[in-house]
Image (cartoon, rainbow, N blue to C red; front, side, top):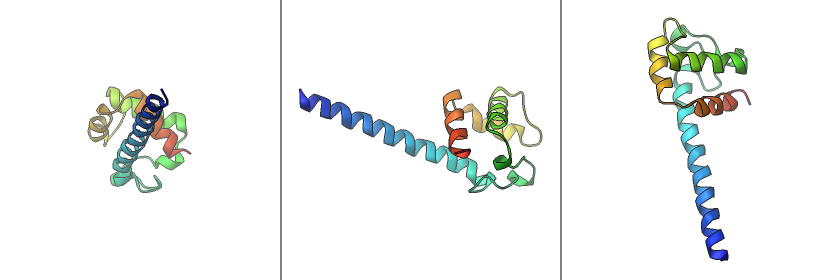
Length: 98
């Protein structure tokens, strides 16, 4: 029985580790334009993410996903957000605003 629990534990740890790696890669894409500390205006046009509240970031990202938010960068961000779930968006924002 203990071998079964050990196997379950290994699977759970592996799942969490892979989720963390996946989240890091998703955030790395964001950092490519917004800066390592989210201190840049992406392509000189966006808001500076580090200066936004958590709620404002979530609203913007969900709006990009829905196609209801954005200006000059709307189409680029819409494409990026289509890949993410609402849970992914909240996890990314939690990492940004920690």
